[in-house]
Length: 207
Length: 161
Image (cartoon, rainbow over all chains, first blue to last red; front, top):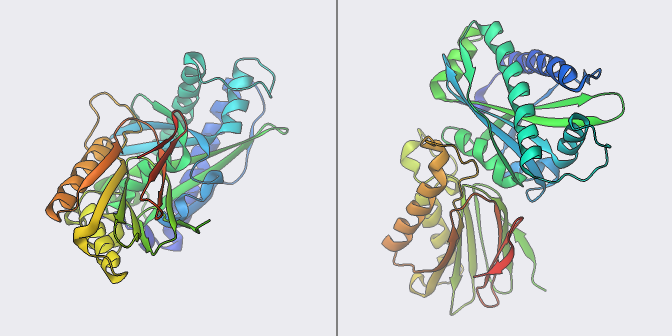
């Protein structure tokens, strides 16, 4: 494995390890979410996907679909960024549960909603990163989250560009949380910089 | 009604009249639309990064502004266009996340737009209008009928360049 982020060159075994990280991270995130919502939250085994840029616009219901993107800068032993994307329906469900509104209440993107969404992103990303940190013994610290509500293509281009420097594909993890009735779908992109990706795989003992 | 041809991320396409080329959800990426005023050929590229020199190997030339624009012009010539009749319209290059003290990566939109302007200038292709910057996504469509560029956003509706 060269020092770059060769997503295409990942072996099945390495993808398995990344899926397992996704699993543990998402498990932690589900626990955090359950505490936050005061509900029992189940999660499905996360799907890990390696996707070509040309296909990026087809996920999440097309490139023009409105989504909520939350981006955090990651620092410490590995550096890069972490992006969490929620489709509008999932964002609505989460915000409405947290604000004690009915599930179908329309989502207004006012200051309050944006701040709730940022906090959700903060908690999910934080629990995800702490799982990763425990697993690898690496010091990984999340920064302050920033949020954008816009076309999925435009938001996805942020992680895609980071991968584009060395690869023709993007690596992402799809998480599905459910409280039994409503299902919340979130996409998570961990975007380590070049050196960090190798350090990460090394710490996991797979290179 | 002309066919609507989709151009993906890190992709480029050209077409003879009548045609409409579109690319969806430009964020920090830049869409470069070329129009041949004589023959009405159109071309559209969706680049992600300013320069191919930062990559270890270039497997997809449409990904970078420098190689992508050269290839786009080349393909326009294959369709019979003379480079001197080409005009350009560009859109995108937004900064989707407004971090304070944004790192180099997050300012990529700005660098993409600058690179595109420089390369088009070097090739003597005038940019007749552009809609770049900001912090929002754009979908664009170039029509071979009159070279009109439609720019669609979620927050600001549709405008024509």
